[in-house]
Length: 198
Ligand code: GLN
Image 1 (cartoon, rainbow, N blue to C red):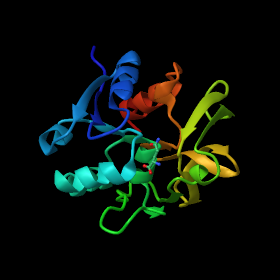
Image 2 (image 1 turned 180 degrees about the vertical axis):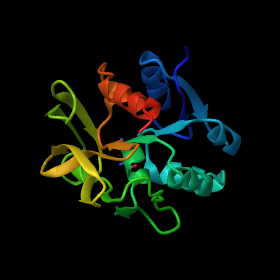
Image 3 (image 1 turned 120 degrees about the vertical axis):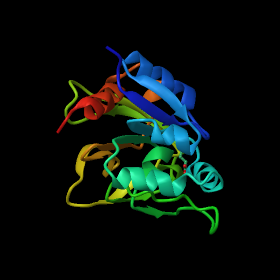
């Protein structure tokens, strides 16, 4: 039995680490750089990196509209850090006009880009994560935080008084980077969301 075919948006950022983490929890991960590749996957992971650069490439490759349409159609997705920013419906401090990060509206939420970065660039710590059997070692790198969530959104973890992990239906987002630790519980949670039928 093979696992679900999950795409990793492979334009920029932590692509290799997420491909490895998904394979480690039994999925069949594939890099996505083109429209045909997006059409062929069941779900999509959007990695951390730089949301304005990923957005620029999404525009150049004409992937932004197809990706927004798949999300609107219910495709399961997981976004980490820059990926969380792109999954938002509204982005604060989105970047310079014409180069700004694109809100793909996978989750009804407002995120602030580089929110932690204004104080400290990077930090890590143990945080409680709803539904997991113990704290997660969360690594934040110029991370966003969530400033508003819509009524359908569940907050799974908080740091510095703000949500840093959220879920709406079959779309999950974290402002930290589970792919850089050996802990595969968040990738496993995503695969469980993809394979669940509710
Ligand atoms: N600050 C980055 C951005 O705006 C996100 C950082 C990350 O993904 N590690 O996209």
